[in-house]
Length: 175
Length: 199
Image 1 (cartoon, one colour):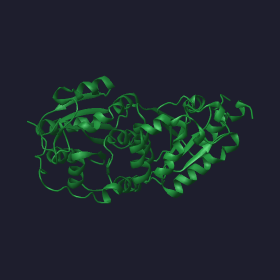
Image 2 (tube, chains in turn cyan, orange):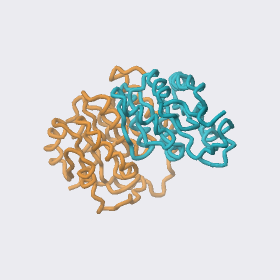
Image 3 (cartoon, each protein chain N blue to C red):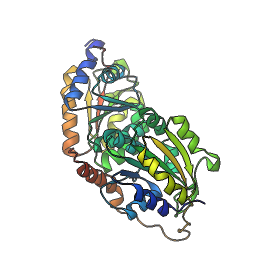
Protein backbone atom coordinates (compact mmCIF):
# COMPACT_ATOMS: atom_id res chain seq x y z
CA UNK A 1 0.00 0.00 0.00
CA UNK A 2 1.11 3.54 -0.68
CA UNK A 3 1.41 5.84 2.31
CA UNK A 4 -1.50 7.93 1.01
CA UNK A 5 -3.72 4.85 1.26
CA UNK A 6 -3.54 5.12 5.04
CA UNK A 7 -4.98 8.64 5.05
CA UNK A 8 -8.68 8.65 5.93
CA UNK A 9 -10.42 11.69 4.43
CA UNK A 10 -11.24 14.20 7.15
CA UNK A 11 -14.64 14.73 5.55
CA UNK A 12 -15.42 11.03 6.02
CA UNK A 13 -14.32 11.13 9.66
CA UNK A 14 -16.34 14.29 10.21
CA UNK A 15 -19.39 12.66 8.68
CA UNK A 16 -18.95 9.50 10.73
CA UNK A 17 -18.73 11.43 14.00
CA UNK A 18 -21.65 13.68 13.10
CA UNK A 19 -23.69 10.58 12.23
CA UNK A 20 -23.29 9.54 15.87
CA UNK A 21 -24.83 12.82 17.00
CA UNK A 22 -21.60 14.60 17.86
CA UNK A 23 -22.39 18.30 18.29
CA UNK A 24 -19.45 19.41 20.44
CA UNK A 25 -15.70 19.00 20.54
CA UNK A 26 -13.45 19.50 23.53
CA UNK A 27 -9.80 19.35 22.68
CA UNK A 28 -6.16 20.00 23.13
CA UNK A 29 -5.24 20.03 19.45
CA UNK A 30 -3.38 17.12 17.93
CA UNK A 31 -0.67 17.24 15.27
CA UNK A 32 -2.11 14.11 13.65
CA UNK A 33 -5.69 15.37 13.41
CA UNK A 34 -5.19 18.84 11.87
CA UNK A 35 -7.57 18.14 8.98
CA UNK A 36 -10.26 16.72 11.26
CA UNK A 37 -9.90 19.64 13.66
CA UNK A 38 -10.40 21.96 10.70
CA UNK A 39 -13.50 20.13 9.46
CA UNK A 40 -15.15 20.07 12.88
CA UNK A 41 -14.25 23.64 13.73
CA UNK A 42 -15.75 24.90 10.49
CA UNK A 43 -19.03 23.05 11.15
CA UNK A 44 -21.48 25.67 12.47
CA UNK A 45 -23.49 23.00 14.26
CA UNK A 46 -20.54 21.82 16.33
CA UNK A 47 -19.54 23.63 19.52
CA UNK A 48 -15.74 23.65 19.51
CA UNK A 49 -13.93 24.21 22.81
CA UNK A 50 -10.17 24.57 23.06
CA UNK A 51 -8.83 23.48 26.43
CA UNK A 52 -5.48 24.09 28.06
CA UNK A 53 -4.92 20.49 29.12
CA UNK A 54 -6.44 17.10 28.40
CA UNK A 55 -7.87 16.73 31.92
CA UNK A 56 -9.98 19.77 31.16
CA UNK A 57 -11.08 18.42 27.79
CA UNK A 58 -12.46 15.38 29.62
CA UNK A 59 -14.21 17.24 32.44
CA UNK A 60 -15.74 19.84 30.12
CA UNK A 61 -16.95 16.97 27.92
CA UNK A 62 -18.53 15.26 30.94
CA UNK A 63 -20.34 18.48 31.82
CA UNK A 64 -21.59 18.79 28.25
CA UNK A 65 -22.76 15.17 28.29
CA UNK A 66 -24.71 15.68 31.52
CA UNK A 67 -26.29 18.75 29.94
CA UNK A 68 -27.44 16.78 26.91
CA UNK A 69 -24.77 17.37 24.27
CA UNK A 70 -22.74 14.71 22.47
CA UNK A 71 -19.09 15.68 22.76
CA UNK A 72 -16.07 14.23 21.01
CA UNK A 73 -12.82 14.59 22.96
CA UNK A 74 -9.84 15.09 20.64
CA UNK A 75 -6.24 14.78 21.76
CA UNK A 76 -2.86 13.33 20.90
CA UNK A 77 -1.49 10.12 22.40
CA UNK A 78 0.85 12.25 24.54
CA UNK A 79 -2.25 13.97 25.86
CA UNK A 80 -3.81 10.63 26.69
CA UNK A 81 -0.79 9.85 28.85
CA UNK A 82 -1.27 13.28 30.44
CA UNK A 83 -4.87 12.69 31.56
CA UNK A 84 -4.90 9.11 32.78
CA UNK A 85 -6.31 9.92 36.22
CA UNK A 86 -9.15 11.99 34.83
CA UNK A 87 -9.87 9.25 32.29
CA UNK A 88 -9.99 6.79 35.20
CA UNK A 89 -12.38 9.01 37.13
CA UNK A 90 -14.68 10.17 34.32
CA UNK A 91 -14.49 7.27 31.92
CA UNK A 92 -14.32 4.31 34.29
CA UNK A 93 -15.47 5.14 37.83
CA UNK A 94 -18.19 7.61 36.75
CA UNK A 95 -19.04 5.50 33.66
CA UNK A 96 -19.41 8.42 31.28
CA UNK A 97 -19.81 7.18 27.68
CA UNK A 98 -17.33 9.59 26.16
CA UNK A 99 -15.46 8.87 22.93
CA UNK A 100 -11.89 10.10 22.58
CA UNK A 101 -10.27 10.55 19.19
CA UNK A 102 -6.53 10.08 19.74
CA UNK A 103 -3.82 10.59 17.14
CA UNK A 104 -0.87 8.20 16.99
CA UNK A 105 1.82 10.86 17.29
CA UNK A 106 5.37 9.67 16.66
CA UNK A 107 4.46 6.63 14.59
CA UNK A 108 7.17 5.71 12.08
CA UNK A 109 5.91 5.48 8.49
CA UNK A 110 7.60 2.08 8.35
CA UNK A 111 5.15 0.93 11.01
CA UNK A 112 2.09 1.65 8.84
CA UNK A 113 0.16 -1.53 8.24
CA UNK A 114 1.82 -3.21 11.20
CA UNK A 115 0.82 -3.42 14.85
CA UNK A 116 1.49 -0.17 16.68
CA UNK A 117 2.96 -2.22 19.50
CA UNK A 118 5.88 -2.88 17.11
CA UNK A 119 6.70 0.84 17.01
CA UNK A 120 10.01 1.84 18.60
CA UNK A 121 8.36 4.94 20.09
CA UNK A 122 6.91 4.53 23.55
CA UNK A 123 4.11 7.06 23.01
CA UNK A 124 2.95 5.07 19.99
CA UNK A 125 3.54 1.51 21.12
CA UNK A 126 2.22 1.64 24.65
CA UNK A 127 -1.20 3.24 24.12
CA UNK A 128 -3.02 0.01 23.36
CA UNK A 129 -1.47 -1.98 26.24
CA UNK A 130 -2.13 0.94 28.55
CA UNK A 131 -5.80 1.19 27.62
CA UNK A 132 -6.09 -2.58 27.93
CA UNK A 133 -4.63 -2.37 31.41
CA UNK A 134 -7.14 0.34 32.35
CA UNK A 135 -10.06 -1.54 30.82
CA UNK A 136 -10.79 1.24 28.33
CA UNK A 137 -11.85 -0.16 24.93
CA UNK A 138 -9.69 1.03 22.02
CA UNK A 139 -10.58 0.82 18.36
CA UNK A 140 -7.80 1.50 15.87
CA UNK A 141 -8.44 3.18 12.53
CA UNK A 142 -5.67 2.28 10.07
CA UNK A 143 -7.33 2.88 6.69
CA UNK A 144 -10.63 4.23 5.31
CA UNK A 145 -12.02 0.69 5.57
CA UNK A 146 -12.01 1.14 9.35
CA UNK A 147 -14.50 4.03 9.36
CA UNK A 148 -17.36 1.82 10.64
CA UNK A 149 -15.39 1.50 13.87
CA UNK A 150 -16.54 5.01 14.81
CA UNK A 151 -20.13 3.82 15.04
CA UNK A 152 -18.87 0.78 16.91
CA UNK A 153 -17.04 3.04 19.38
CA UNK A 154 -20.22 4.95 20.23
CA UNK A 155 -22.24 1.75 20.48
CA UNK A 156 -19.62 0.33 22.85
CA UNK A 157 -19.46 3.49 24.95
CA UNK A 158 -23.24 3.56 25.30
CA UNK A 159 -23.76 -0.13 25.95
CA UNK A 160 -20.84 -0.56 28.36
CA UNK A 161 -21.21 2.92 29.90
CA UNK A 162 -17.55 3.79 29.70
CA UNK A 163 -15.08 5.89 27.75
CA UNK A 164 -13.81 4.50 24.45
CA UNK A 165 -10.68 5.49 22.54
CA UNK A 166 -10.68 5.74 18.76
CA UNK A 167 -7.04 5.77 17.68
CA UNK A 168 -6.10 7.36 14.36
CA UNK A 169 -3.00 5.68 12.99
CA UNK A 170 -2.16 8.26 10.36
CA UNK A 171 -2.87 11.86 9.35
CA UNK A 172 -6.37 12.25 7.90
CA UNK A 173 -6.29 13.82 4.45
CA UNK A 174 -7.64 17.33 3.79
CA UNK A 175 -10.40 16.00 1.58
CA UNK B 1 -13.02 37.88 59.04
CA UNK B 2 -12.60 34.56 57.17
CA UNK B 3 -15.72 32.47 56.84
CA UNK B 4 -16.42 28.92 57.88
CA UNK B 5 -16.96 26.64 54.86
CA UNK B 6 -20.39 25.54 56.13
CA UNK B 7 -21.53 29.11 56.72
CA UNK B 8 -20.44 30.15 53.22
CA UNK B 9 -22.16 27.14 51.62
CA UNK B 10 -25.29 27.81 53.65
CA UNK B 11 -25.51 31.37 52.32
CA UNK B 12 -24.78 30.28 48.75
CA UNK B 13 -27.49 27.65 49.01
CA UNK B 14 -29.97 30.22 50.30
CA UNK B 15 -29.36 32.27 47.18
CA UNK B 16 -29.16 29.26 44.84
CA UNK B 17 -32.70 29.09 43.50
CA UNK B 18 -32.76 26.42 40.77
CA UNK B 19 -29.03 26.58 40.13
CA UNK B 20 -26.95 23.47 39.59
CA UNK B 21 -23.98 23.11 41.92
CA UNK B 22 -20.63 21.54 41.04
CA UNK B 23 -18.42 21.20 44.07
CA UNK B 24 -15.24 19.60 45.27
CA UNK B 25 -13.13 19.19 48.39
CA UNK B 26 -14.35 20.76 51.64
CA UNK B 27 -17.17 22.70 49.95
CA UNK B 28 -18.45 19.40 48.54
CA UNK B 29 -19.09 17.93 51.97
CA UNK B 30 -20.76 21.14 53.16
CA UNK B 31 -22.92 21.57 50.05
CA UNK B 32 -24.17 17.99 50.18
CA UNK B 33 -24.89 18.19 53.91
CA UNK B 34 -26.76 21.49 53.65
CA UNK B 35 -28.82 20.75 50.55
CA UNK B 36 -28.65 17.18 49.29
CA UNK B 37 -30.35 16.54 45.96
CA UNK B 38 -29.93 15.96 42.25
CA UNK B 39 -28.77 19.53 41.67
CA UNK B 40 -25.39 18.53 43.17
CA UNK B 41 -22.46 17.15 41.19
CA UNK B 42 -19.32 16.32 43.14
CA UNK B 43 -15.91 16.21 41.49
CA UNK B 44 -14.72 13.18 43.43
CA UNK B 45 -12.34 11.50 43.58
CA UNK B 46 -11.10 13.99 41.01
CA UNK B 47 -9.15 16.92 42.34
CA UNK B 48 -9.21 19.79 39.86
CA UNK B 49 -12.26 18.71 37.90
CA UNK B 50 -14.94 21.05 39.22
CA UNK B 51 -14.31 24.05 36.97
CA UNK B 52 -14.31 21.96 33.79
CA UNK B 53 -17.46 20.11 34.79
CA UNK B 54 -19.13 23.41 35.59
CA UNK B 55 -18.11 24.94 32.29
CA UNK B 56 -19.52 22.04 30.30
CA UNK B 57 -22.75 22.12 32.26
CA UNK B 58 -23.14 25.87 31.93
CA UNK B 59 -22.63 25.78 28.17
CA UNK B 60 -25.05 22.92 27.63
CA UNK B 61 -27.70 24.27 30.02
CA UNK B 62 -27.77 27.99 29.28
CA UNK B 63 -31.16 28.38 30.93
CA UNK B 64 -29.83 27.28 34.33
CA UNK B 65 -27.41 28.99 36.65
CA UNK B 66 -24.38 26.86 37.42
CA UNK B 67 -22.39 27.45 40.59
CA UNK B 68 -18.90 25.99 40.88
CA UNK B 69 -17.66 25.61 44.45
CA UNK B 70 -13.97 25.04 43.81
CA UNK B 71 -11.06 24.39 46.12
CA UNK B 72 -8.00 26.62 46.02
CA UNK B 73 -5.50 23.81 45.45
CA UNK B 74 -7.97 22.16 43.08
CA UNK B 75 -8.26 25.25 40.94
CA UNK B 76 -4.48 25.66 40.89
CA UNK B 77 -4.25 22.12 39.52
CA UNK B 78 -6.38 23.04 36.50
CA UNK B 79 -5.86 26.79 36.31
CA UNK B 80 -6.02 26.65 32.52
CA UNK B 81 -9.77 26.12 32.77
CA UNK B 82 -10.09 29.79 33.71
CA UNK B 83 -8.76 30.75 30.28
CA UNK B 84 -11.38 28.57 28.61
CA UNK B 85 -14.15 29.94 30.83
CA UNK B 86 -13.08 33.48 29.97
CA UNK B 87 -13.10 32.64 26.28
CA UNK B 88 -16.37 30.71 26.24
CA UNK B 89 -17.95 33.27 28.60
CA UNK B 90 -21.02 31.37 29.82
CA UNK B 91 -23.27 34.08 31.26
CA UNK B 92 -24.87 31.58 33.65
CA UNK B 93 -21.68 30.52 35.48
CA UNK B 94 -20.53 31.71 38.90
CA UNK B 95 -17.14 30.30 39.90
CA UNK B 96 -16.39 30.41 43.63
CA UNK B 97 -12.99 29.38 44.92
CA UNK B 98 -12.86 28.51 48.60
CA UNK B 99 -9.46 29.82 49.60
CA UNK B 100 -8.52 28.23 52.91
CA UNK B 101 -4.83 28.07 52.07
CA UNK B 102 -4.50 24.37 52.80
CA UNK B 103 -4.94 20.94 51.29
CA UNK B 104 -6.78 18.13 53.11
CA UNK B 105 -8.57 20.70 55.23
CA UNK B 106 -9.62 19.25 58.54
CA UNK B 107 -7.44 16.20 58.04
CA UNK B 108 -3.83 17.24 57.70
CA UNK B 109 -4.04 20.92 56.65
CA UNK B 110 -1.01 20.73 54.41
CA UNK B 111 0.14 23.93 52.72
CA UNK B 112 -1.00 24.49 49.15
CA UNK B 113 1.20 25.91 46.40
CA UNK B 114 1.40 29.65 45.97
CA UNK B 115 0.85 30.61 49.57
CA UNK B 116 -0.99 33.73 50.64
CA UNK B 117 0.54 35.92 47.94
CA UNK B 118 -1.11 34.05 45.06
CA UNK B 119 -3.81 36.36 43.70
CA UNK B 120 -6.85 34.44 42.46
CA UNK B 121 -8.79 37.64 41.80
CA UNK B 122 -6.15 38.88 39.36
CA UNK B 123 -6.32 35.51 37.63
CA UNK B 124 -10.06 35.93 37.21
CA UNK B 125 -9.58 39.43 35.81
CA UNK B 126 -6.86 38.32 33.42
CA UNK B 127 -8.89 35.33 32.22
CA UNK B 128 -11.75 37.59 31.19
CA UNK B 129 -14.50 36.84 33.70
CA UNK B 130 -17.11 39.60 33.67
CA UNK B 131 -16.33 40.26 37.32
CA UNK B 132 -13.68 39.01 39.71
CA UNK B 133 -13.67 39.84 43.40
CA UNK B 134 -12.63 38.71 46.86
CA UNK B 135 -15.17 38.27 49.65
CA UNK B 136 -13.92 38.15 53.22
CA UNK B 137 -17.02 37.91 55.37
CA UNK B 138 -20.51 36.47 55.56
CA UNK B 139 -22.27 39.87 55.47
CA UNK B 140 -20.31 40.73 52.35
CA UNK B 141 -21.26 37.41 50.74
CA UNK B 142 -24.90 37.92 51.68
CA UNK B 143 -24.87 41.36 50.10
CA UNK B 144 -23.10 40.22 46.93
CA UNK B 145 -25.12 37.06 46.24
CA UNK B 146 -28.12 38.65 44.46
CA UNK B 147 -25.94 40.39 41.90
CA UNK B 148 -23.71 37.37 41.41
CA UNK B 149 -26.70 35.18 40.64
CA UNK B 150 -28.84 37.81 39.00
CA UNK B 151 -26.50 39.41 36.48
CA UNK B 152 -24.79 37.91 33.43
CA UNK B 153 -21.41 36.35 34.11
CA UNK B 154 -19.21 34.50 34.19
CA UNK B 155 -18.39 35.79 37.66
CA UNK B 156 -15.38 34.76 39.71
CA UNK B 157 -15.38 35.01 43.51
CA UNK B 158 -12.57 34.22 45.90
CA UNK B 159 -14.04 33.36 49.30
CA UNK B 160 -11.66 33.73 52.23
CA UNK B 161 -12.31 30.62 54.32
CA UNK B 162 -10.86 29.71 57.69
CA UNK B 163 -9.41 26.18 57.48
CA UNK B 164 -11.18 23.64 59.65
CA UNK B 165 -9.12 22.52 62.61
CA UNK B 166 -6.91 19.57 61.94
CA UNK B 167 -8.63 16.46 63.30
CA UNK B 168 -6.35 13.61 62.42
CA UNK B 169 -3.10 13.66 64.29
CA UNK B 170 -2.33 10.23 65.56
CA UNK B 171 -5.67 8.68 64.65
CA UNK B 172 -5.79 5.81 62.15
CA UNK B 173 -7.17 6.97 58.81
CA UNK B 174 -10.50 5.51 57.70
CA UNK B 175 -10.84 3.23 54.68
CA UNK B 176 -12.42 4.97 51.69
CA UNK B 177 -15.83 3.45 50.93
CA UNK B 178 -16.79 2.23 47.44
CA UNK B 179 -19.42 4.98 47.35
CA UNK B 180 -16.64 7.57 47.15
CA UNK B 181 -15.68 6.16 43.75
CA UNK B 182 -19.22 5.74 42.41
CA UNK B 183 -20.53 9.05 43.71
CA UNK B 184 -19.71 11.34 40.79
CA UNK B 185 -21.26 9.00 38.22
CA UNK B 186 -24.36 8.40 40.32
CA UNK B 187 -24.81 12.14 40.82
CA UNK B 188 -24.27 12.79 37.12
CA UNK B 189 -27.05 10.36 36.22
CA UNK B 190 -29.36 11.86 38.84
CA UNK B 191 -28.67 15.34 37.48
CA UNK B 192 -29.39 14.14 33.93
CA UNK B 193 -32.73 12.83 35.16
CA UNK B 194 -33.43 16.19 36.80
CA UNK B 195 -32.62 17.93 33.53
CA UNK B 196 -34.61 15.47 31.42
CA UNK B 197 -31.51 14.40 29.53
CA UNK B 198 -31.30 10.86 28.17
CA UNK B 199 -27.87 9.39 27.50
